[in-house]
Length: 470
Image 1 (cartoon, rainbow, N blue to C red):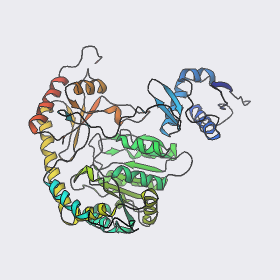
Image 2: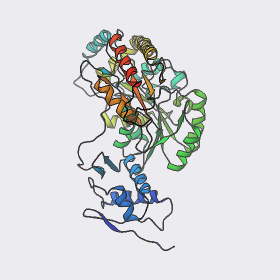
Image 3: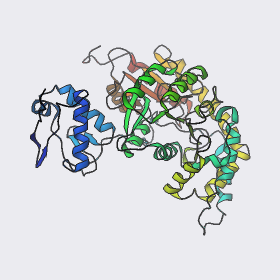
Image 4: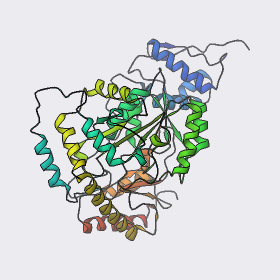
């Protein structure tokens, strides 16, 4: 078959000539390669608006689905940016204010914050203030040393325990500013090439999408079942994408509350070994004792671990830790230093004291008990509905009854002063969002206020709008 070049002036002042015939692979991949080449060469400069899906499909004589799929992947890679109601643009230009929902949103006074995973004050507040006040007397006139965080890292590793984290010394760890920052640091260390790919759950914490976008990496979802990621689905995703990294939350998956046990983890590690896949485990939502070894313990050659104090001690600390595989501590620490040189001395000194004094463990146990109490309230009021919950998970996953859609239910709840997250906020760009919502349980309101909000939700669930399909 003779090679045919499809050449049209499809973008204002830009001639773009993707070759869709005479090359191997599905058409959407050929179009995606054309997009990459045009952006890399400058033919499609930052901020340039691309044509609508149907218009480009007509010009290139392909199906709209082919163009839509290529656009979706390019958006996930950070190559393009999609703006609701405005179109698709080449990333990097002034395309207007992002429509992405902030990772943290303050809620109005007097309302229920069921969006953010907050830490209840179970007595740790006063002790934290005292420890931070003491640490404030540190010498702040000099830069932090390259080893300033080692005492903190050693304390954290001892607290986590080798049974969970695997064998590790403080030189294989680095202080970070919460799990989101730790994840970004590790991804910066691992991702390579012009179009790297990260694998994750089909529903994931929105920060995963943010991290992939910032690092210009593609993001692909891997199917899950009641035990977490499916090994066969991971194997297929590795073969199809050539992904470098799996980023996963195995102990407490947000938003579904699913826990991946040791046997399933071992099966996933075998797949990862075949593909030389790096695994980053984000353990930030765990507030109870770990039920299985971490991926780092099971996969010491390519397993990375990220945690923080944000869900067990205090979100305002913004203090966490990343742990590298055996022999990779130097590269992790160099990457962290390239980002922020060194963690502030008072902060890591306070962190060390929080752990070694026993405050971290006392707080964790108190938060675990408070969480179990609130989850019990949810079950007592909303127990007739389809809810996934655990005593040690700070949120529940509510699958909506027929007649409700997640976005509509979220809006109606907000009108009653109840703020929750719809499934759409956890779905990947080309993923399907179920009709479900995540409701966090540790809002800083009295139990009576919390229960009243649940009762209002129960009444709403039982009375879906009449203008929606079932």
